[in-house]
Image 1 (cartoon, rainbow, N blue to C red):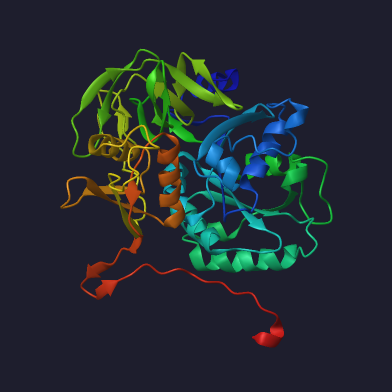
Image 2 (image 1 turned 90 degrees about the horizontal axis):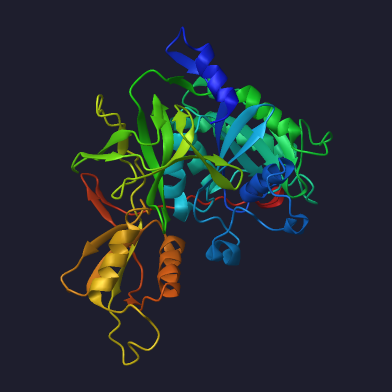
Length: 429
């Protein structure tokens, strides 16, 4: 942790609850509205990434499929320091198929930047992610991006966004939000479309002013909800989450609590906080910060790591149910065995069930056929990314045509619905 956090803890000696000099912020938006570009701009302005050749590249989209498709698939954590305050930033996917990534990481934040394209305005996924953020009580900051585009209409877009807030707000205070105007690709922001500065300082100042510092009890028994998993070849599984209360130290014994699972006691192997594009190993971390913890070989997303003296689990992470399914099976064609390294039923099953550990929106169930598994996801893109990832890993298999998932309720048979927004000129309305 930074010295600033330590000073804050010392100042809080007379009170159990304090606010540490820290901000946890998620960036949410519809696909291709500029989230990752904005995060990269913040990193470059903070001198986290000093390579001048990096201009025009998306630092945060490091996954091969992300670079090829030009979209964010996996949520990512980074952190910058500004005016003595650490800002943890979570970059989230914008496509609806990866909404599960958004839903599980919003729990780690206290505020959000809602990016809206200055030409397109709020889109279907804008509504979805904003509803989730407001439901969690996050403090929003609206960022109207791409105001340099030829057909930009920032004033109209702000009005459309206000209408969206009126539909979704769960608290009157959520209707009072600041608006920042940006050209993310140039790393510029301003308080009005006509007064965009030379850097992103207006946005950073607004984050410090609007997003609340975490209000935490550092004297309580430690507790942390696992929101994400990573893997290191030397240290094994890495649990990532925000410390809800208390202090976690390297070497501490914590219990792993999961609904329906055993209570497992294990020691914290190593403890890291996020710093720029990487992680910084620390001896201890305080409530409010986002950390990466090793030592829990069977860590699960949605599980709670808690002090054995107070093993009370946190509310599990919930995500929306899948809408599309298809089957994965062993390749039975005449060309089987020619391309893949892993082609048996056992290997296919192990890989699919391993995917469930990090992909909360996915469902895998066996079928009546021993070598075939039904795989359900949020949409065609969600499932196609899984298929392509497994293919590149050397798996050989065959898939069926996708099928919409129907649900039977007391009201009858229900099917997924998509929200369609059509913009036309006045003469056609």
